[in-house]
Image 1: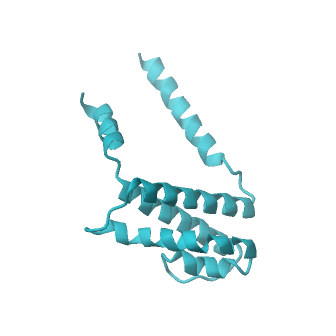
Image 2: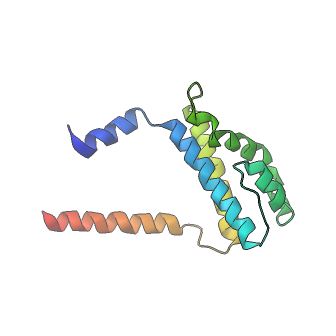
Length: 136
């Protein structure tokens, strides 16, 4: 087995959980910053999700319950990118779950479609599969 299928099987056998955690943190950070930007609230350059949440709680008091999860997710901005700290499956699942909570809350506040990303991805995959089928 060579090429892409080998890479996919390798990724399934040994996923890069550090990367999953890092990108979940980055996604949550961008959503929180988008919410602040939309509300015309200035924010400093930071990767600290709790600091961003502190500014958002004035707009959305019900979001305060996210504090412990965002504290955990904040550690993934830097720590898992350096030697000696490794994410496990539980950490990765928790990071993605927290990211999804933030995504849903912010998209609702910004009046964006809750599942537009998934639909767009499905359409792209479907088109790609159609092109492959036509080439054969």
